[in-house]
Structures are given as C-alpha cells and as structure tokens.
Length: 326
Image 1: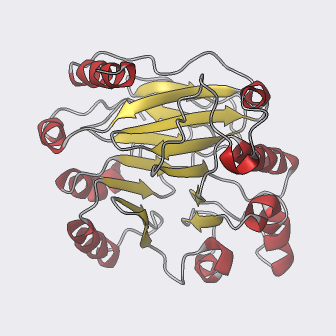
Image 2: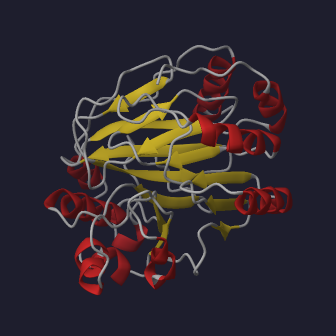
Image 3: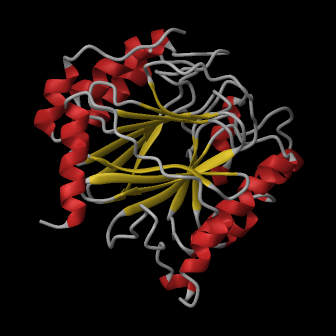
C-alpha cells in the first residue's frame, strides 16, 4: 500500500469518526514553490514535491475565484498570481462564483473588470465559467467570455467522469430545481461539483448560512451524491467541515475583502479573512486536492480530501449536520 493510499484511508476514517483533521500546512511562498520546479518547460511544469497538487494524468485541474469584478488593484494582483500559477499547475479552466461585475456593465467595464486583468489567461485559451451573484445583471449570461451560453444555470463536462453545475442562487425557482433534478439524475458522473454565489453553510457575521437555499438544494445534493460545492458572496475564505458527506468551500475574496468578518464556529475547518485569495483545484480519481493562495503568494490552506464512496454518502446523508449560529 502506497503512502498516498495510507494517508487517504486514514483521513477518510478520521472524517467518518468525527475527528477534525488538520489538512492545512504552514503558509508557504508561492514563488518558492515555483522555484522548486524551475528548469522544466512551461508545458511540462509539475507541482513541487511539497504541493498537494499532484498534476496527475487525467485529473481535472481548475482555478476558483469569487467576488472579483471591482477593476481595482487587488483584483489585478490576484489575477496575476492566478496567471503565474499555470507554470507549475496547468489548470484547464476557471470557475467564477458570482459578483463578476460590480457597478457599471458597459463594454469598457467588461474590459477593465475582466478582459484586462485576466488577459494572459484568456490569451492562453483558458475558459472562464461564471455564475451570477447578487451584484450581477442577468444579462451577463449573454457575455461570450463567461461561457454561460445565455443561461442563468447550466452544466458542462470537462472530462469523462466529471460533471460541473452552475446555479443561479439569486432566484431558485421551480424551473431551476426541476432542471437540476433532471440533470443530476442523468449525469452518471463519478464527480459532481456545484458552484454558485450564496453559501449554504457559512460562519460569516455579515451574511452567514443561507438557510432557505439550503432547504431547497441540500436534499437534491444528498439524493444524487454531490461531492463538492463552491460559493462566494462572503468576502473571505472558509473551508467548512464536511456536511453530510459533502465538501463546502467559500471563496469570495478575489476582488473584495471583509476583514474580521468570520465568527469561527463548529462549522469551520479553516478560515481566512485578513487578505485576498484564489484557489487551485485538482479532481483526482479518489480525492479533491486544493491550495488556497493569498495576495502575497502564500498558501494559506491546502489538503487532499478523500472522495466519499456512495455507501459512505448514504450513511452520512442522514447524519445530524454541523450547523453554527448565523
């Protein structure tokens, strides 16, 4: 049995028994990590040995950014780090978790708040997939480079065995719920990943968990074996403890920041509200590997989270959720 297998099995056992597993590691400068892989060609760049991002053949690799569209210096700084990260981690697309455009949405705004900061990534042929936030105009769905194809909610399959769903959490009507039920039933994918704006679980003081949205979506997530959920809205980073067998991340700090807004509760596995950030994600065969990187290029959270089996998901679906105060 390999060291990786032993670690994955041990982590799964600890999660199932309710023991908190410290998956994060000390903050580590991103530039130092990139230096460790110096000498390789950009196209062949592998993650350094200290990284949880394994660059496995056939894995799905992507970036995650939320609450971006300010056009300010923080957005540009995070955008540069995201672009630079492709040297060591050649992600294939980027998920945008809503609030993609604050304020005006004229053609010049799209240039300032999206096309210019992410130009190196766009020039490399990397697609961005957007979800709508409460500060977004629904007409953003028509903007070609958000790849929404005119829809408020949609799904795509980056590789066999993985299905990703974008939802419009601003207006969770019957039409969207029925669409989601149908698409989940037909997906047949090993990995099912959701991304939308408002978090079902949150330790934020300003917003907190969206209880109503959770009542609408969680039963479907549990019924159809959803694995990972990404949300924004809160202008900080939080990794939640697994809720009924589902991993939840909040990543709403790629352009906005609300310092000191996290009130750590029993929900919290890791929280960060003192700087801007973005995420790098790798869906391997049996784990979701991730790094969260701040504006100084430091890894402030990382882990290799085991994918729960269908049997484990069924057991945990009926467990009492860990819910902190709003």
